[in-house]
Image 1: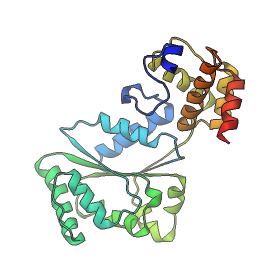
Image 2: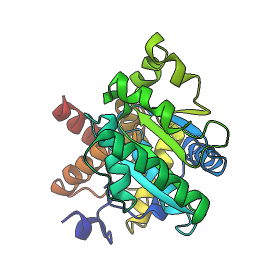
Image 3: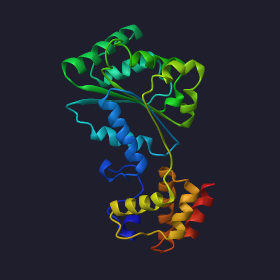
Image 4: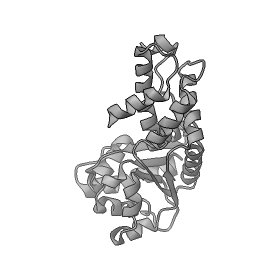
Length: 265
């Protein structure tokens, strides 16, 4: 109904959008550039950000930019991941039978990573999401993952992502050794007020909108209540469009935003 009322070709403010339609904020572009540098140089990266800040979107954009003839992308997101599960899941995604025992999977992990890099000239890029949920044992196991070839450069690139508490947790004494091995760090914050306006217009335009359907007061209110976090912006904007449609308004105003925000509380 929103599509018909506002003349969209598809519903805006959803996460199911092609990567080429993703809003290129300054922070988003800088994060992608840093991660591309880290991958090219086979480094270990730590990416943190608030829930809904766009970490997963950035990783999706990064993955789509990688040449499959040169890179093999592996994505892991398992809150209770143990070292054994880690090695097994990586091997499954690399089309290798891991075996049941951790020692077997660990040995095959080393062999497989070396084969990809040395024989096939393909660099494995391993992303571990929701890192704040990992056990201390699992995080410390990453020392071996990035350093099993002690006398040579790493044959893989590793990216660990998580919420802000992960950054603080890495400073604990128990994790100091792995924290010292992080080569690239980036914290993804919210959009600025101007970027929030640009983000909203960008999303409308990519959905087939012909003009800005949100008033200046509405945009300011959305920024204040979202702190520039894209996921919250998306939720507020979607509900505002529904409210405006049911009121037969073709422009979302601050009153619409206030109603939507009050219903979120």
